[in-house]
Amino acid sequence: MPIDVDFGLSLDTKGYDLKDGRIVGNGGPKRQMRLKEFPHLYLEFAKAQSPEQLLHFVGRFGRLTNDDEGDNVRSLLSGTKGMSAALELMRGMIGNLPKWPTGRRFEYETPSLGKIAGGIPIRGKLTAALVPDPMTGAWQLQLSPPTLLDALWLQFGQALTSNAQLRQCDHCGKWFEAGVGTGRRADAKFCSSQCQIEHKSLERSRKER
Image (cartoon, rainbow, N blue to C red; front, side, top):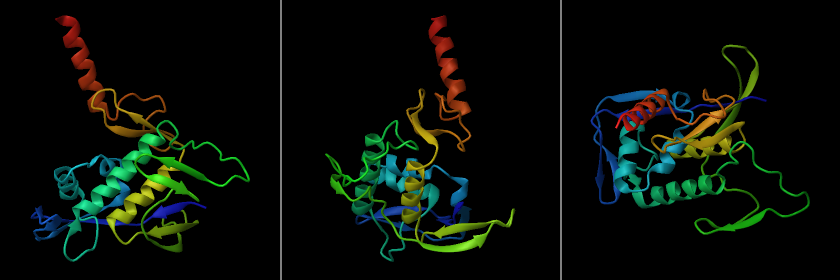
């Protein structure tokens, strides 16, 4: 059965600030976007490894939690580091996780995440409903995470079991998904057409020297 993730991004148009270890909004009219516009947003989240990078992420996509006191930077950075470590651990296996031996308990240990037993943890909460697709009328499972942070972990979980492959751009080093359903060929070397153009331009400049 198809799965639809329903979540709306909401940004303070006056921006965000870091105050006492938390990210708080400065108010103003809200700018609304849909998570469906950013199918690989979890990769951007995983790259935020400092308070400044996390603030930049929130400035582009909105608050990650519903905490009245603001987003707790220390807690969120723990999440970005955990997701980044998991992505690195599964490099080359995204969308193609190897089958686990039947009858054997799932258990492994990593330097960053520690001992994992029972399954790969996908953090976050959500509500679920059966709804008809507005375009086809076919029934689908709709998952509604309450916060952007929950939505990002759900995206991460979907990526692990998709048909996509995780690759690193030869030009900017950015992680991106390639393969079926991503808009990028499975053997793509660049995360965007712009990076491909800039890379070729640099190569021509080097040859002309």
